[in-house]
Image (cartoon, rainbow, N blue to C red; front, side, top):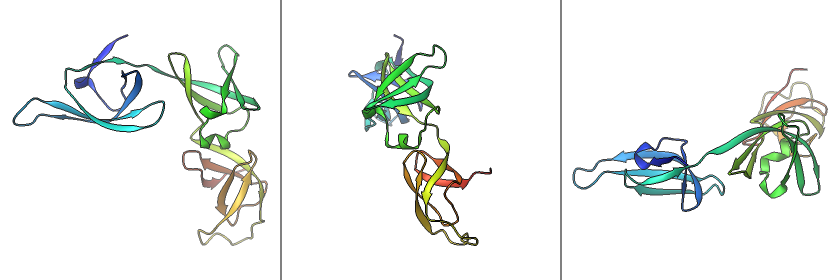
Length: 189
């Protein structure tokens, strides 16, 4: 495995520290007038999501970690297992529901997701950033209900519930940001 020194840190660099995979969020090279230089680093544990701040000696060495991000197509779920198909080998890979984030509720069958793994062990599933889904259930909208930003609850075809503007009707296709779970716009048919 290639090594990296703390002076080589840049935003987004992943490295292994104490058996944990860390990603640099922010870094700052500090050269005080008196004393040795150091690298102040804000880093995120890639697997747990925890963020910590630490100072390192610029010559401190770490093993560089390679996090593999692979596109896979969501096929179906069976109980607590969700099956994803590798588009190159057509292999089905089962992934436990505990690895799926809250934003997975916006994913329907045949959508392509990013599967994150480290040393062959899958630790996260990233759905597409924006998805287009059909509204399956909501109160009917009325013409002219576009002036205010008043919202109403709506159930999507995946079963997820979000808030939508009053003019949205059942059967409308809408665009959603899966990071925030918010309605973005109505799709053109």
